[in-house]
Length: 199
Image 1: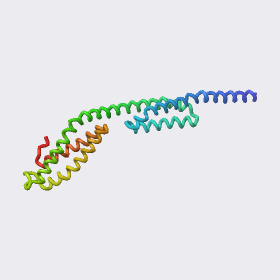
Image 2: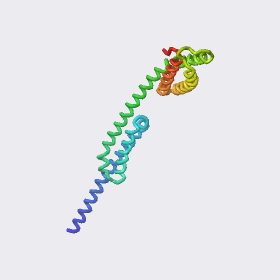
Image 3: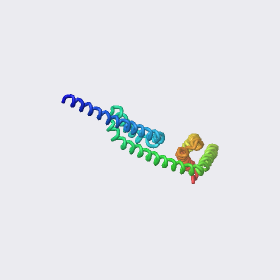
Image 4: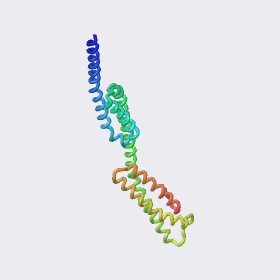
């Protein structure tokens, strides 16, 4: 009887080992698949959905921890959730990238007219400041302080425009347009302060 119970225990232990061994390979495979899937989207996710990427990285780490502990059941149970999170991350990154690309395309289209208008505004301002600086009497509504501010503001305007042009040259039209709009607004304000029409 004692021999039988020993044999039964041994058989049960062997069955347990077998069932664990049977789960080990699928669990390892599940983790490998999740890692490969995440690796494939990590680059764009870092750029377009970094917060969501961090959450998925944490979920995958939990899966790997379970695998390291030999809790294969937890791995197999958790893997579908992690894979679903990776798919959502991929979709989120693709959507954000599409939005960014669309904004960049709009900025590129807008750059053409702006790249012609702004240098003309700066040149007109330059001539106006030069002419007013040589004049003995300032026109009505233009003050010495306004002229001095325009003089110093013009240099800043030129350097900001150089930055915008540089961004456009490197293909970053979104940054170029953001800077160009700032230059345009400032130039229009300076024109008004010097009694010029900015329209």
